[in-house]
Each structure stands twice: as C-alpha cells, then as structure tokens.
Length: 620
Image (cartoon, rainbow, N blue to C red; front, side):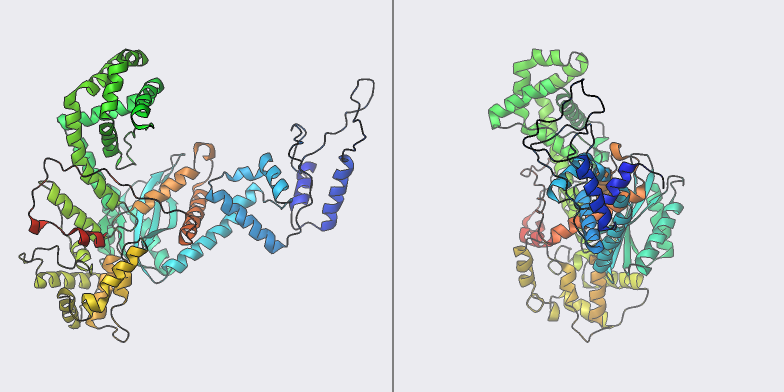
C-alpha cells in the first residue's frame, strides 16, 4: 500500500475499527520516541560540540507537527482513543456533523490542528471522522434522517408546493421546490438547470417531477402551487393548470407587493426624488467612516448610543421604508452634524465634491424632510403588508384582508377577487361573512354558496351532495354545530392566545364533522375549508432556503457542489426545527414598526366601515 506513514499512524490511532493491539503498539512507539521529562534531567545539550541530529521535540498531540511551538500551559497529554463500539462511534460522528452544520462550520475544519488539539484535550482522544467521511457517508445518513422527519410530518396531509430559482456563487442556476405543511416549509429538492433555457416548459418539467415525488414517495396531497410572477413561472402555472385543473395556483404575494413598492419608486416626482436623496445620504455616511464617526458622536450625546442606517437591498423587501424612517428618526441629529462639522465633512468627501455638496445640501433643506416624511407614510402600509405576506404561515385570508386594508388607505387599487381568496376569508370561523357587504349580490348567502359550489367542483372534480347546502347555511348563520358555543371558539382563542400562537384553523375544522358523518354535506364543507385554508400564499420558504444555502456556499467554500449544499441546508433546517419544537431556541421577535403615520391619501371611513380590532387580532 502507498501513502504517507504519518497518515497511516494517525488513522490507526483514530479509527474505531483497528485492533486494540495495533493502537497499543503505536502508543508504545510514540512513548519511546517522546519520553516524559524527568525533574532532574537538565535537558539535551544542543551545543555544536555534540555530533548527530537534534533530538525530536516533544509532541503535544496526535496531530501536532514539529513546527508548532510548545504549549506547556495547556498540559495536553497524548491519550489512547476511547474504546467505543462501532455503534457508539457512529453516533459520535453524527453528533459532530450536527455540531458543524448547526453552527455553519466548514467541514474541512474537522482536520485542522486546533480542532484535533481541542478534542484530544477535552474528549479523551475520541475518534474524529475525516472531512471526506463527514461530507459523504455521515452527511447522507443525516439527510436520510431529516427526510424521515419530514415524511412523518407531511404524510397524508394537504400540501402547498413552492418553487423558485436562485444563482449560487459559481453562477449556477438552481431551481428549488419545497412543500409547506402546517406553516412549515420542508425542502424536497434542488435541480441544476444551468444548461437549460429559462422557459416555462423546463420549469413545468421540474415541477411535475416534484409533484410526482411528493405524492408517490412522500405520501403528500398537493392541493396548490405557488411561484413568483416571472415569465417562466407564470407560464408554468398556466400549463400546470391545464394538466391539473384541480390544483389552486397562485402568485407569490410577497413578490407581488414588492413589485408594487418597486413601481412606486420608479415614478418621477418630488417624493421619489426625496427617496433617492435619502438613499444617497445613507450610503454616503456609511461609506465614509470619519463622517459616520462624527454623526455617531452626536447620536451618543443625544441618545446615549449610536445607530446605523440600513441601505436599500432588493432581497430585503422592507429596506426602502426602513432607510427613510431611520433618517427621519435622526433628522435633528443629521442637521446638527452638518451644521457643526460642515467644513470637516466637505474635506472628508473631497474625492467627490459634487456628491458631497449634494448630500449636505439635501440634509439642510426643510423641504427634503417634508417630502421624505410623506413618502414614508406611503411606504409604511406596504412594509407592514410585506411582513404579513412573507410569513411562513401566511394564508389566503391574510392576503385578502391585507389587500382590503390597502384599499381603505389608497385611492385606486386593483384587486382581483378570486374565489379561493373569498372563501379563505369566509371559512375563517371568527369572520365568515362579517367583512363582506350584505348588500352585494356576490356576497349574500346565495352568492357565496355559488362560489363555494364552483370551487368544490373544481378541486374535487365532482358535484357535491345536496347536504352541502344545508351545512353551508348552518355555517353561514352561525347555527347548530357551527355556533360559537357548540364550536367552543372562545375557548380555542384563549388557549392559543395563552400559548402565544395564532389560532390553528385546520385544527378547528378537524373537529367537524363528528365521527360517522363521512361523505355528508358537513364532511364535504369541512374538507373544502381545510383545503382552502391550507394554501400558503407565498414562496418565501424558497427564499429562506436560498438564504441558508448562501450562508453555506460562501466565497471560501465555493467548490462545494449544489447537492452537498442542499444536503447541508436540509440538515441545518431540520436541526433548527427540532430545537424550536423542544423550546431550546428563543423565538425570534417580530418586527414592530413605528407608530402609525397615516398618509395624505388616507380615506376617511365611518364607524360602520371600520373593522373591529379584536376581530383582526383573532384573524392574525
């Protein structure tokens, strides 16, 4: 066999499958080469009078090299590997992978000298896997375990499929597809489509394979699909709707509202000019450290602490509003900084004097701040809507109610009242028809039943029984088992409120109908309600997956192939889910925007048009 002796010696010491006799022989050889220091031994004489080679330096660990300086304060001793059984060694190596993946450590760090020193000191020489084993066999075992957790969570449930594209550091075009069940997005797969044209047909081919795998291998029931509004994604949904008419297909509403913000910022008027100036001010101060230091000095004097400004980013959908509001919060401090240090600021920006003068003049103009304040009042409702639309548990009724709120705020919206959105609001037991106008023929009892019947025939591909109308009328009139008292709605609301969660509407509808009522009208109404309420109205799960993959596939780790990146991301997201389920991680706090600032275009509403705040609290 060919190879370096040092490699084989290290392998013999760490491999759990090597005989104990071989390990002991190797330890004896190392002890003979590196005898322990004796108290009375004055040490070797390195004078030039003595011939022969220099004696070897004392080794500090199994993986140390002669170039390493001695570290006597650590007092690391050479220890024989732990006597682990093959099963115990397998569990140990799997836990090492979990440690590396959860903390986003590079897998090559397992072979670094410091890692070996650390484990030899605190883990008593426990056998560590090689980088190849950690990123190969052990990672594959972890992926299979994560997929088993996913199958257990999604098997037999109604699922919304998600798909979106992304480019990694090596400019490969990747198409990810996921499954959202119970407000949790699970990774199903990633395909490399770099060599294929970006067309609807190729996107459809990947989606059809994903649906086939989800239904045949994972036991899911795909009821809808969500993607962004790009040309290939939209064409894919049109073709998929022709082949699978029972599926409910939607745009990602987080992307849709982001596009609305983008359309606003493309306008040509004084407000948008103020927004452009705000971005330039934020970028100028953050790119000049001395100017930022002067500003932060004023911030510390006034508030006791400094702050940074967010610069707009395409993937941070609320960043434009946060930039504008951040400058408005520091309006007085910015103007004071410019007034007190104008000459110094001009000297700092002397490499581009025109830009510097433009920034300083904008800060000094009162009209700029008035325009920026008005622009922020328009962007704030859209930023709040984006937060609602991009959540992992966003449902169709959240979107329609959010659009209704935007309709109240702005003068001329364009809303497409699709049947699924209307019924998603209607099937919320706490709302039903209370948000619809009873004077409209589309939202009276007969109009809503027509919508219900049409959607039932579409998604189940059959006509409903006559009992559906009876169950519908009981639900519409809040009577029989659909009444507040019989359904225990107040108790459910209080229970979820005490847990700090939103009401699980799927759990509510799972109590209807009672056992023994299969295929009756109430059963059909409950099945339709659960299907509609299970739809997720965004593809933000794919964006979160891409963020996780981007953290893994960095410039220093750009040689990783996309399958391994996907595998590591899958295991990392599964570990995070386990920690959240057991309460080991702190729940991330939601972003709270500043106090409401109604825009000038705010429509005046009467008390009859105002929605009860307690009702909206139950909805969200």
